[in-house]
Image 1 (cartoon, rainbow, N blue to C red):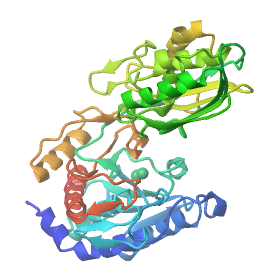
Image 2: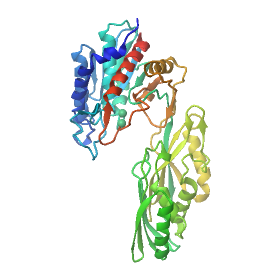
Image 3: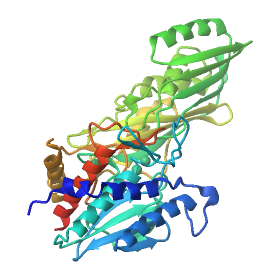
Image 4: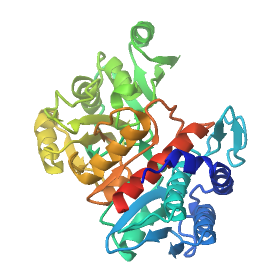
Length: 467
Ligand code: ZN
Ligand code: ZN
């Protein structure tokens, strides 16, 4: 029997939008200040979870709230369980919105609201996909669970809690990234380079150096404060430097004290070449002057070994895997004071063929002669890959191709999605290659056409996988 999935979605458009609006109206930003035992990540995420489960209950599905952190809506029968992992928490709204981020509005065939594309819209699309399969009474041999998390944007404690207490699905996907598919995710680990604190000697004495907010972001701003005996020369050089490099900035001189602020461009740390690292540019500028002791080492190391080294070539860490692509390095945080010494936080996204231990040993070897020490960052994540010939991947790609006419290829990224929760887990939509990505931005939207296309694809795909 050939099912016209598009037509099935067509007849449910209004109901889908109404349910989506209900969820979008809930401010579900994690709020630790209001967190309690009953609301582990605050009232908003819990309320959004309850509202979503309520929709499932209303439609006659089996639902379960798991500790107010996650929950599921189940359909089907059989031993095997498929998981579809979405989330209802959202990132803070930030500034720059033209409309109320929690008052969804349709303009120019787009739904504008925080969470419309990440991830309330795609989650609702996946839910309606399951509902269509159920409504049509199609025969299925497996169960499927729409699993809803409330802490995806922060610590993932929702899924830690869920998977520790509930049945583990044997395969599944997360509608929280891009079509056609993301079946590989690089490993993620950070290493810290520490410098001693001696700044004596030289014509310039460093007072402080600061750049970057997070290990996984390219630093947009960098600031250096130092005293100098060559202020005039540095000032003149600075303007030439700004002219010749893709940065802007200011320099202020007060007697012997100089303050330089440099502005680059932020970007996600998994894609460092898309950003302009203000920290490495400023260190490179200062490296041409005579600084004392460890400050000199700090600038020299950054300038020679890290600046523009997104593949960590000079550090001897470069590695490319045929399928998962190349290792990338982001220098996300820089600090130096004469009291604490210096720190550079390096975040690596690495394919299979590289290990955390290997990275640490090689980095130590490469930087040994600078007299620095290497320290492990927090908890890393290992690479995750589901082979292209796994029926999960081939089915999802075939369905995508059938609906779009575009051949889908396997793809690995540097970021982490819920796909990695399962050994046979991937991310699948709902952003199409030609959609505008507004996730985490002001005026976030989801095109109605994308929402409905994704729903049809999800329905077809889930049916193929549980029939
Ligand atoms: Zn998301
Ligand atoms: Zn997100």
